[in-house]
Length: 103
Image 1 (tube, rainbow, N blue to C red):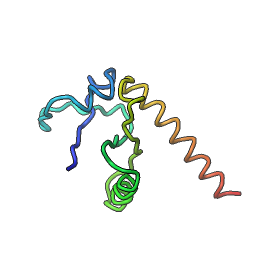
Image 2 (cartoon, rainbow, N blue to C red):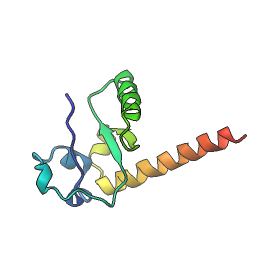
Image 3 (cartoon, rainbow, N blue to C red):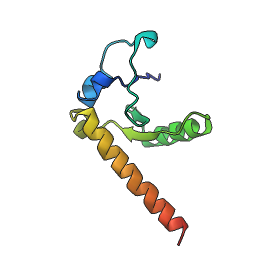
Image 4 (cartoon, rainbow, N blue to C red):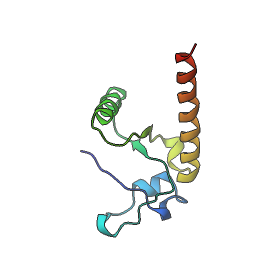
């Protein structure tokens, strides 16, 4: 099954583990964080399943997102720190891909 958790402003200073394990969310009452990029954290999938999910997501027509796996090393870090790390890595990879296409 798939569980979608929307990031709220109060989650940003908490750990990823706390954010993922927060209680039920009432969609109509949520104050979804608008100050953060669109990141999908995935957990419990094999590498092959992740690739299949990402491919299906990209074909869905939804807004583009950056994907990251939840690993023990990252689960205790503050969400804001992870967002910065992930987006930094994403920008570096995107730049390398762009540079290699132009050479």
